[in-house]
Length: 181
Image 1 (cartoon, rainbow, N blue to C red):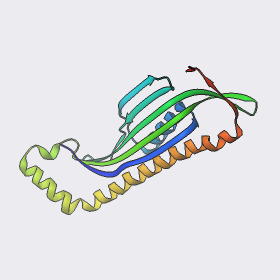
Image 2 (image 1 turned 90 degrees about the vertical axis):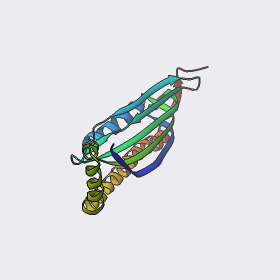
Image 3 (image 1 turned 180 degrees about the horizontal axis):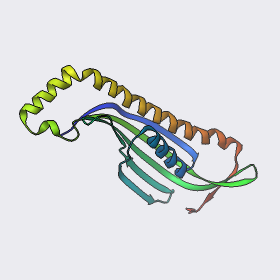
Image 4 (image 1 turned 135 degrees about the vertical axis):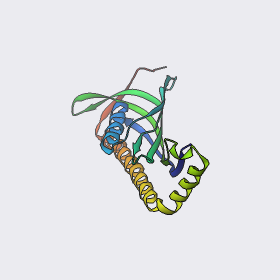
């Protein structure tokens, strides 16, 4: 079984206000593609409530570093009370979403994900020795990479959402579409 080391544990990002759900997805996808991560969608759930839509998405993008090690980012995105809103910007109407977003980031460094070193007990013993004495320098560098990637993704999403927060001051007339009681 692969050995997972937690590098980033439950880094949170919360936001409440105007934003565009589709643009949030695009921003995350573009970042993952630009950094060489392969996207793995673990959970995608959407339901409609009286307050608005509830969307829960769990992504586990991963990036193969070597044939022995890979970086994994787990993102749990929870959007609640999502309503479609129409705002006016420079005399043009724009459809956006209004609601709450919470994103929880976890970063893992995974070794022997193909289970090559666990077929025999002697291999497992050698893997432990190699990890401790020979690969320690490399694994520390790989752990710094995953830490940097999670921090960068966090700041990109935070900047994206704050762009809507500060732009909303210039928008007028937010009128809620649908989901009215």
